[in-house]
Amino acid sequence: MDISTATKREEAAHTLPVYPQLDFVPVSGDGSWLTDADGRRVLDMYGGHAVAALGYNHPALLDAVDKQIRTLPFQSNIVANPVRAKAAALLTAFAGEPFSHAFFVNSGAEANENALRIAFLQTGGKHVVAVEHGFHGRTAAASAVTWGAKEKWYGFPNAPFDVTFVKRNRCDAIASAFREDTAAVIVEPVQGVAGAKDLCPTYLKKLAERAKQVGALFIADEVQSGMGRSGLPFAISHSGVTPDIITAAKSLGGGVACGAVITTAEIAAQRRFGDLGTTFGGGPVAAAAMTAVVETINKEGLVANAAAREAQVRESCVVGPIESVQGKGLLLGLRCKGPARAVRDALLRKNILTGLSGDPNIVRLLPPLNLDPEDVAHLADALADIPDGTC
Image: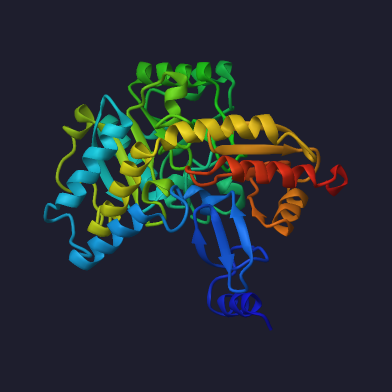
């Protein structure tokens, strides 16, 4: 029995069987490449669901985490910490005006949960508007605003509040979706799990206008699309909309679990002791990782690189079984002429790791933000070598 097969069997024996797994078990990584125990190298065009912002073995991230874990691995939010303070300052500056305050948590679902909590506390509302096909997490409130969760896997006997799902990119459906007691509208500017489907600017603007009319907060869920992945610091800026709250996670820590709720001074001023809470959120190691990620994105021009690699993918990867590209930056969907699963599996046989989505014809790309042009060329060559008959 080879090492990969033994690892999969051991994991299956002791973990809940809730993830279908591919026939590849990485044990190390460098740059945008993963290596298994037998020395097989695979180009990671999926980035662990958009987590590996800096790829693997990046010295800035390694040094920051190593230094912090040896200095002060943890202290709670009951005491101030200079690493947390720096991370918050850098992150809010990265988001730009009018954002000035952050609340750190441990994941994207937790960030969205707390963003919704802030909206209910601030407005006194009892209702949320979400967009069809959106995904916001698997905790109680986050999954209540996730399209299809109730029918497929929600699990809780009741949702914690009323939700209306508005049709994607249908401006004529917006007005009737809101109520006088609507506390928030939550959107992914680019819907990741749906297949890298970006929402049109006019639609987002009308959602923001309607939210303002009824006194609801606009929450931009940038867990997948944020941290420069869209070719701008946050994808909502492509539409010209300024949200009340931005949520971030995944790429934010470069592999260290973390999340953030980013908001304005006006909203921060209305929060009181005890409104929000977390044990591990904003811990020193996570804060050091976030600091390293933001500093590296800025220093290495990775926002611009995401935009440049998007252009390269659009120009070179509509070949073989691929008929079009959708999404923004390095949150992209390759639309296949047939089932995406066959294309994903063919790419893995050619040592390229990609992902699927809620759209059965979309192969999803979420690679590191420092992806090299040569890696995109490698993907294009591999796609060109896959016959249309694969689909």
